[in-house]
Length: 191
Image 1 (cartoon, helix red, strand yellow):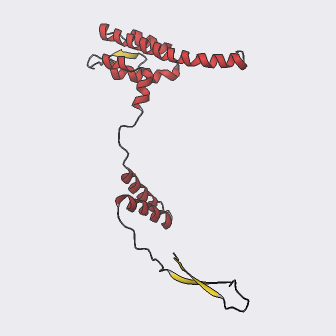
Image 2 (cartoon, helix red, strand yellow; image 1 turned 180 degrees about the horizontal axis):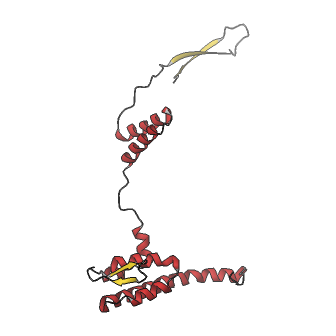
Image 3 (cartoon, rainbow, N blue to C red; image 1 turned 90 degrees about the vertical axis):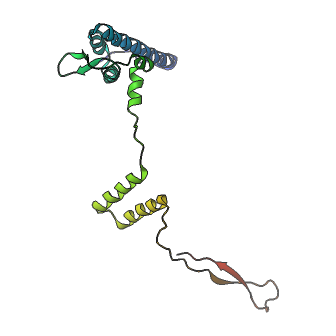
């Protein structure tokens, strides 16, 4: 179990404010060290500094370091062999590319999907899946309606009830013996 002082109030606020600076400095320092170690591989065909950096890097940052180094440098990584990084003579390095992006940012960018999302293809597969799994007819019809809406097809004709005439009686303001007047309204009834 780790022992540390619990921070409160102004001390906690100051430490949190300083933590952002430490994080930014850490990312910059990691990029500098990683690039320098990769440059050593480029110049001397020796991955010893990449391995030393890997071993010194916190476990949650190691994956980013490995992906960045393998993408930009003449290195391979095999954790099962025990050697970690090794020089890969046949690979082509991209040192200018490695200078442009830090290991942490490289991993963030590489997780973004490069494929476009095809809405219609996804909708068709959903309809097919719903039919196969025995979804209710209402749900399948609803999805098919969405599909028709996007493709511009018109749905099956809807029965529309014609407008009907409704007569509402209203009280006459004149004498009590006067006949009641009628007001005529057009009302559209929809089914």
